[in-house]
Image (cartoon, rainbow, N blue to C red; front, top):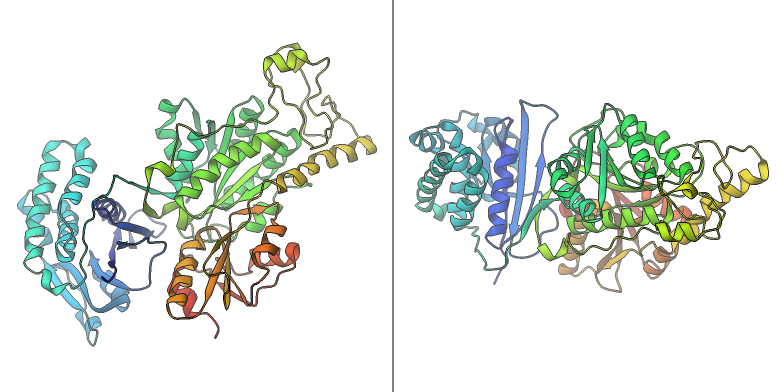
Length: 577
């Protein structure tokens, strides 16, 4: 039996409910037991412009969106003109019967136009604003998707607005669904619901925030900045239930300094931000390194410089994360590639930050942060997550010491850590200046050297914690793709497509980026015949690190820096013969 694989696209202006409607339909697909991945494409404005939401549904794992579309829901004429070229032969354009647009854009295109009474059905129940509900119900009806999952989402989404609103939207959906069933023959792509246990529908941002809560994060400070804002919002929404403090700071400088203070006092602290905000935070990050206070920075990338493309995606801040702040010190960088890994990286980030008393930077990006997909609940165990606090002293351990030196020189570079307020022995100096083991300011050259070496010695031990890259595909391959971060799904599907065509390919994907896992890279790529680097930046930043630290050179680089995420089609179209 052939696989189910249908791509929907909903397009319109900002303010027309494109994203909320698309997210609701994605949730309905997941509740129907299907695999689904949804990606929003929106402009940096509150009203107007052109936004669209792409949803790919299948009965098999979906790791990336594709370039083609089967069903286009057009809320504006501009949507038709912009996306008609992406429709597969026989693809359906669904719009309201009154929508005006230049139909000459359809000439010569093997597509079908379906004008439906979306507004009329909605107004029949009292309000044209429910036309989006009608459109989604028709999309379900055309593709054979059962209506029940969509009705359950309607009930959940409109419950706070009252039962009357839920009932109105339900009747709109039922009427529109019946209308679509009578015309379902024009759509050859069908969806078959599958019985399976309940699953989550979530974004990378939500998954990371859940991991932070599970890891015991108790303080969050940030200044809203796309695409990191959803993490700040999620933490604020759950602050009361989880007993944490969330501060909307007046600036990124204030936010990072608040986090350093909270970490110094013993709270697990995090600052969510994007590139421009992280620029402002860099001095605070170096302060945390000098004070050896454990902090976590969630750096969600977007294109720059300056404001750049604030609602788009990029992988262009790897060098920023690696080299930001003055001076030399240990830091840890990791880049999750799925919501499940975002959850895992959040937990690891807080544990490693405390174990090595250093900053940990988690590199996300708009594509991973905002994309929505189905996931298994057991992959997000917030109740049984191990919390490891490293050399944080208990009161008994502190009292047993003859003397206490906060910055004691140690073999692994990590000093025993007592928190302020633990008693007379926990009284010590902390300063941004170079200091002695007791924390007193010093300019002694020998001691300054010893302290710098102590902080850098952590890297030797952190390196042992870095996980090797992920391997996927046959052991022997003609092509080996390398990637990091959110490019994972598109690369993996490209590998599958190549192998299906008889061209052997595999992939090596990196999650732990710094300290650079040179040994793991050499082992994973030892038998590679031809290496192709895939990155969302213009300068192949990771490929540079791979060559510099492991001596491995990529023979081809497939780069993308237009603000959009990768698709397997994009990769294969640019693959050299």
